[in-house]
Image (cartoon, rainbow, N blue to C red; front, side):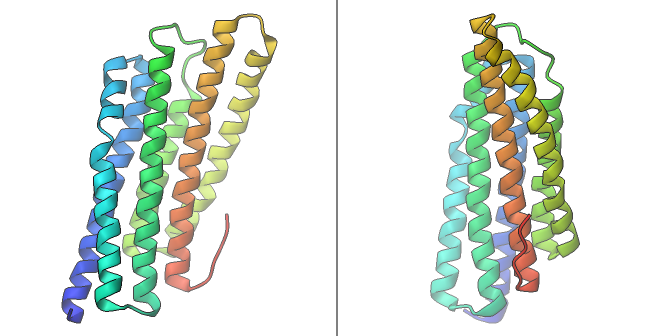
Length: 218
């Protein structure tokens, strides 16, 4: 494979990651939106529609392995491919969390929500931005944007801790079993979103390593 073809293959790989990121971002949004609206039909569509994201993840993995086998890249080229490979894995896990949220929606059903969903949609908007910016940082090799994305995870954690305390109080009160059960389910949703933030942070950290050759943990 010539250098020109190799560079095009790397560019195509990045475009596939951006496409996967866009699909994952939309899935996270729809999962939480369907929960807020208690749209069970939409939740089921999310669960049934996970295959295209998995298929794209497998394609990216195959492309990465083929590039390593054919080109035997070294130094930064190898870091680009391994970053893409691990990024696809993180995006797939994010899609899995969206499916988890949709499944919780089905468990709650049409039962009246115990509280208005304010913090959970806020977390969702924040993690969507983190996903988008972490991938932009990868394509643009933007270390500053990668670091900013990683630092934003602290805000996600703060909201999660506040929600954890609020929902735990409802669960521990034991006054209403159905109310406690829903609080537990909403706590799982918050936890899944917190994990989405962690996956976006993983991508940002890898971008920093890709560009600088140094590992930074956030």
